[in-house]
Image (tube, rainbow, N blue to C red; front, side, top):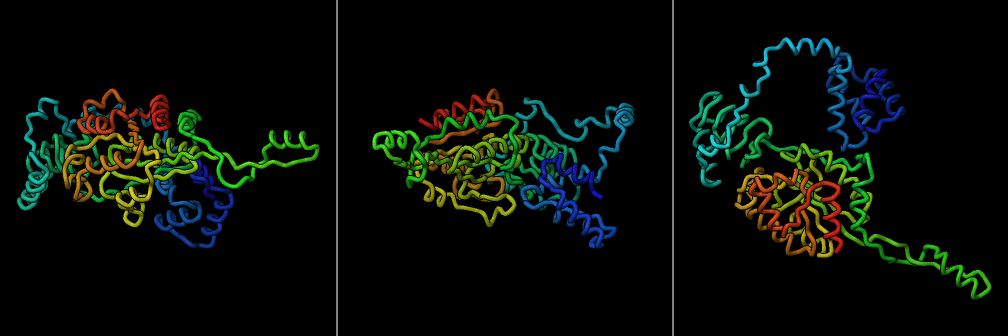
Length: 395
């Protein structure tokens, strides 16, 4: 039983074993679950997933397993799709997409405070659902409040990120941790990071020094064992990952970078932030509150000799970078630019690694501003970009 499920989980990168599969079969055989899909889901996860890092992959694998994707006839499906009227699939009917000229004609609030004050007024006035409008909270319109619409700035309420112009996001945000077990297809990224390593012999003399042993033995005529301290990489690296929202398309690239860094640096610390650095960071996205660390504590914990690498697309509403209370998740007391400057002043070497194509950096105000703040030490997440970054950090 569950052989197809076993291979589906394997396909999605979840490390499951035959022993765990037998445990699942035994549990089902004992009648621990019966005719309840939710109970079966929990039992399968309990038996087959031993690390919560794989919960997101497990959910996607279970969806593929229960949806029966492999049982579909591709030819039949394509035939049915060809018969569907084009207007059924036309997203223009569902999502509002304006030209740059039309977007410029829309009025901006002028400040974060005015935008939130206007939202409060709309919530008091609104009594019904709105779609395609330009004022109330709704969908598919030019109102600054809602989802699937188009406006140069606003508050996203429901729906996914599309235009990357939301100043605030209403819903509670839940992100997945980066998977540090990501298997790299090549070793190129690791080789690029290897330029940052600096070796020194430190600690107790416990490693056999063959050359000096031979030399000393030859001189004295008797065996004279010579030992030396182990050669260790003494570079210390601190990485801060932007997670969620506009960074979702780059999760796989960040996981590869994370895996490569963990294998290359003996002293590696990492934290997460969203869009911009503020007064706290965190270690675990699933336990974001309990794993939180004040940024002041981070500055007091890690010395100036740490090499700091920010990883993010640097794309956000200008309020998030320049204004107090600009965070999309909570009301921050100090602006993001203040905290970024503190990091730059505390650490001797900082760099920003950007996964977005560098041809588009100058079209986003916050990317250009952060690049200037980091004295042009923003690098694309390409092999050449990583090599250039490590060459700078190693100096």
